[in-house]
Image (tube, rainbow, N blue to C red):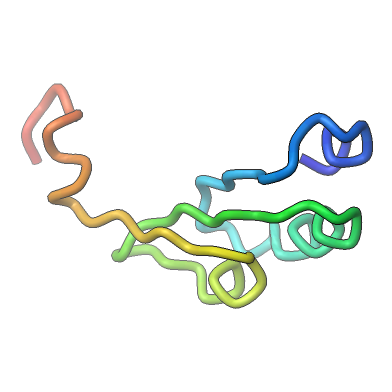
Length: 72
């Protein structure tokens, strides 16, 4: 994410993770003038990523159930 931001390969990164360790990477990308959209789950939301990212989308089980091959 950082390397591609430095190479100016995108304007907005979509980060699908709930790993709060990525907050520093998000801040670095933002310092390079890029935006970060955090995509997490309502059950495992990272409040650090929510606070740091420019935008947040939280997926609910109902949002992804139809894409799963085995029922939960």
